[in-house]
Image 1 (cartoon, helix red, strand yellow):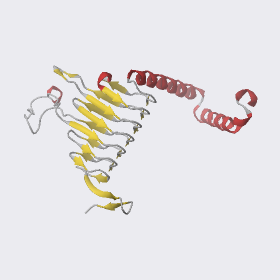
Image 2: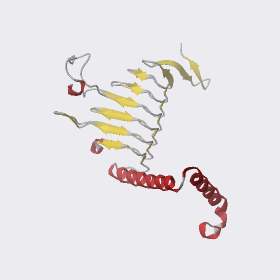
Image 3: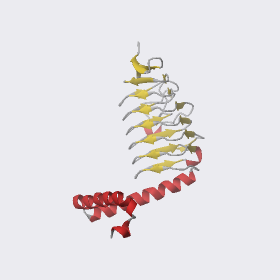
Image 4: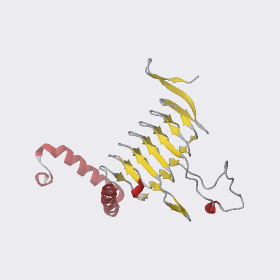
Amino acid sequence: MWGILCCDSKNITCRHRLKRIVEFVRVNGWYVLGEDLLLRATTLLRGQILGHKLRTTGFRIGPGSNVRGIEFIKVGKDFHAGSRLWLQAVTRYGEQVFAPRILIGDGLRMSDSVHIAATNYVEIGDGCLFGSKVLIIDHNHGQYSRGHSSPYEAPTKRSLDSDRSVVIGRNVWLGDSVVVGPGSIIGEGCVVGANSVVKGILPPFTISSGIPATVVKKFDFERREWVTSE
């Protein structure tokens, strides 16, 4: 039987995989195994189709994900996202029409429930890592510092703004539940702590946290270590 399943040089790997399958079935049952395999297959197929549409390679997204405004999105190779990704170039909202751009570099890794949306411009550099429930958005529902939307108007009826952008440099790590708001710039090599809100500019090679996020450490290239910011 082992000769049928795999060649001699791969016996250890085959046995290990078979053992994992048997253990999974023992704990969860055959139905859950079949359901899991079907979900994996459909997810892989969907990723391949969307990757082809986006003209990229290595595109993988988890179940429950949505990608909208594909014509206005450019994704680099080796893009991996967990479940429930929402990636949208917003082209229309009510009577408003937009021509947004979302540019994503190579090797982006994201956990579950990440939301990225643009009415104007969002750019993400190579090699970034985003935790779960990260929100990156270049617009608001309504105007609150210019134009001043009326509080008597339902938020869903307020116009979206479309004249700001978000730029995230390469090798940036955003912790879980980080919010990156309109007009933000995050420099190369930054780390942003969980539950932080980015509003404005974070210098390259720094660690920031808080609401709003402020720099707490920076990388000292001479000492080759992170040091407390003065």
